[in-house]
Length: 125
Image (cartoon, rainbow, N blue to C red; front, top):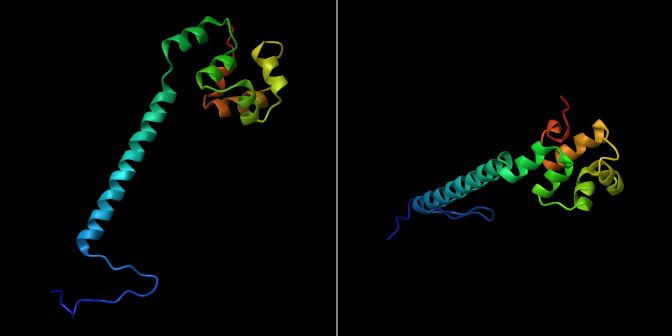
């Protein structure tokens, strides 16, 4: 039987929990936060590492780096153009090599693809 001297009535905006219930809620919250952190780390790791096939395509220099990264990220040309806020036609010209792309456009594409701008620039020796 509960001790009436230690009982307290909750106000309208309060909830009263036993210490064990509170501790259980805190434990569950910490577990969820840990799981979320692990998922974020997995996502970051997957974004940092590039499959061998993609790396070979990037190194070969035979294709547009923008196109390779776009395909690797699973984006359509239209979706990337929208995400980078550039015209789809302009993106097409960049991907086909008809235009090199302005620094502003390449920076927007890099942000949209979650890569450094250097990853989109062809370096000639």
